Image (cartoon, rainbow, N blue to C red):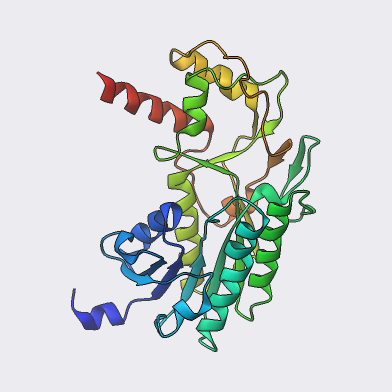
Length: 293
């Protein structure tokens, strides 16, 4: 493609171009000039222009950002899973990026968040209007990052993902197969989204922003079937040989018990490829069995 054509395409920065950010960038690069920011720019996907910087160190951003950005997708993962790690990733990193952007106008700033900001533990249905008052300090830092995005001066949209799973995120499936999951019955409700749908949802909303379509300030991104954890485990056990539960097997979830409502996302016209856990895990199990033959 000619350089002139590339320059006429929308400019998109994926800040935190790791596992999820990289998958988003791969979708977007087909119709945009995509920049992937990460500490090691050589690890961004092919066809994405790498920017080497550490968002937690403001000086590393100096002179690094392009000046043709239409949208920014902020998709950072904490380097440590404690309060400081989360604050660096969700608050300090975003503040540094906003400072480096200066007065460059954006059509939309997307902030990748988590349904862990909901502390509900009563099986209730939660959506974008539900109270977000996380009990854990990590969730509190994510919520603070959301507010930083909303206060940025740019049109901002928060995307709250439930548990992401898929071919590159097999931990839960492997725990069940190896007997390290044995939840009590009835177990808490669990919520999840396949990694392909997670990336596609961000790309979809980004496309709406570039088309000047109206967007809400928050979307819950979770598949269409919240379900109790013990039911998921039992289904997996029926699909594939699993070891008997080991001593010390995990008994429950880590995220309370709530049912995430994705209706606002669906109303934008987004369609899930994996609308429930069965379609996603069935494909993962089938692919594993095929490789093992």
